[in-house]
Image (cartoon, rainbow, N blue to C red; front, side):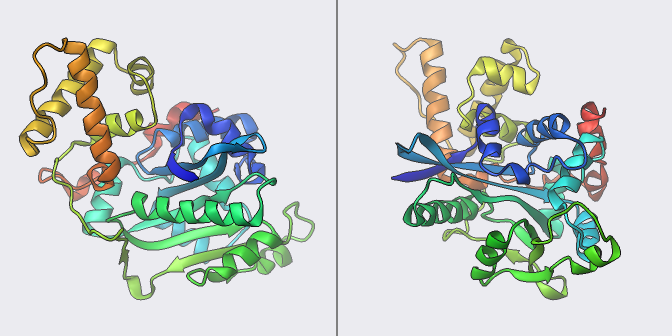
Length: 334
């Protein structure tokens, strides 16, 4: 049996090793690209999942890795207007130089509420070479299920994917939703002797005329908990199996401050959905009650991913969507 779940930071190197050519290190080098990937894992615009097998397959428990990133419309439009090899490399280099084209949480919430979003598939579903054709199909099915859950409720305008080998090109073509935008021959004609392999192509899922398509996972549910962005960030990190000690480091909080944030989340949830966290046995100590509340809340948001979807709060304004992403990635500059 296989199942999908969010990627954990400790698994990143293993996941990237499944398809090293998709790391996007061509422009900035491996070390800076690795730092950019770790930055991506903390971004609200990143959706990365692993496909895990209940029983190891020839030494592999992680048998698939898929990753997608919400990017600015201007970046997507530039890539379409002038197709070139190295889509992942340009995305990663923007993070490394401190001018990320990745949407901030505020930009994502605003664009998905008032407009539409653009998505780059940086890892379509990399797998170990030892899998059988049947096992590969199982991985693809799990990636499809993960995508439905991760993008439920998003209004998607365009999805871009660069296939990086002849095999990948044929695989992408087999999914009829993808449109071949460019074989990149024009780039090679203008740049003879370049170092990129020629069996690459740019594909898109494009909704013409400026329309968008709202992804639905069969229930079309709206969030009811009203979680703030910082609450969602906490829960997303906790869903990756992160301990409170690791959470405090990842979120830059001291443990007392982290506990206050958990208490704030519990209070908000208790108001929005009183039956989710009912009163627990008074005989339980405070720490045990806290663990049980976390367990119930995390189980709920796993089944209701719409609660972690950034949304536009009433006090938000269009101005919030114009905040530049560069400050959040400035620490990655050389």
